[in-house]
Amino acid sequence: MRTYDCSCGATLFFTNTHCHTCGRTVGWCDACRAVTSVSKSGQCETPGCGQRLQPCANRDAYEVCNAMVSADAGSGALCRGCQRTTHAPDPSDARNLTQWRALERGKRRLHYDLALIGVTDQQLDAEPPLTYRFLADTPDEHIITGHADGVITINLAEADPVVREKGRQQFGEPQRTIIGHFRHEVGHFLWMRLVENEAPHDDCVRLFGDHENPPYGEAMDRYYAEGPDPNWQANYISQYASSHPWEDFAETCGFYLDMRAVLDTLEHQSVRSLSVRRGADLDELLDAYIEAGLTLNEINRTMGLTDLVPEVVNEPVREKLRFVHGLFPVHAELLASV
Image (cartoon, rainbow, N blue to C red; front, side):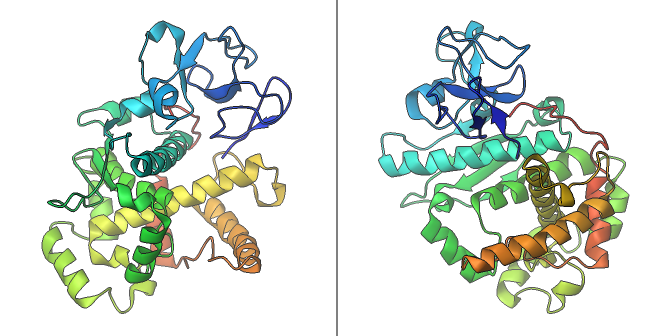
C-alpha cells in the first residue's frame, strides 16, 4: 500500500480522513488516483490536479469511507466505491455501523489491489458488474459469505474479531481476515470475468481441475463431512483449496493478491532489499515474497502474533500462480477507481 503527501509535507495513509499534523481534510481523489489534502475552498491539493471536490455522501453521513467526489456531482453523490455497495446494514444500530465501516475499509483496499494488478473499471462494470451486499443475520436467515453472478455477499459478523477468530480455529484458516475474505471472493468474480468462456479456460481446467466434475455442491458436502484432502499440502495453497477447483482458484487468487499487496507496501516503504523490478515475472515476485515472509513472520512471532505469510508454496501451486499472474497486464498502472 502506498503512502501519500499532504500539502504540509506530512505523510498520509490510505484510510486517512484528516492530516494528523496540520488538521487538513484529506481523502481519495479519483482524478489523480491519490489520497490528497483538500483546500478550504474544496480543491485537490495534489500538484497538477486541482479538482474541485466534495465528500462522498456516505463519508459525510456515516464516515464509512474517506473518498471525495467531484463537486459537480451534486448533493448526495456517492463515490464509485460506495456505489458498488447495493445492500448495507441499518446504520442507526451502532454495532452495525462499526462493522459496516470495517467492511468498507476492506473493500477499498481490495479495489486498490485490483487497480494495482491492472483490473480496469471496464472489467469491473461489464455485465454482471461487481457489487457488494453487507448483511446481518436475522432470526429467519443466516447470511452466507460468498460470490454469485458478480455479487459478493459478506456476513456482517465477519467484521467482529471474536467471530472471525472462532472461524479461524474451526475451519483451520490462518488468513481469515476481512481483507482475506474480500480477496478470496473476488477470485470467484475474476474467474467469471477472465476465465469462464474465455481463452484461458482450458488451461485453467488443466491446472485446477474440472469444475463440473464433481458438481460444486457435492464436492462441498464431501469436504465438510470428510475434511480436506489428506495430502493437500502437496498440491494446494490451503486446506480449503482442496475442496473444489473453483475454491482452489479463489484461494490461489487470494494468495496472489496478498503477495502483490505486501510487495507493493514494501516497495513504497522503501524496503529496497525486497523490492522487485517493474514487470517482474511470477517467480521473481514469489521469491521476493517468500524472502519477505521469513522476516515478517519473525517480526510477528516476536510480538506473539500469528505468521503473516503462513503458506508453503510447492511447485504445483507455483504453476497455478503463474497462470493467475498471466491473466493480468505485465506493466499495470492504477487503472480502476478505488
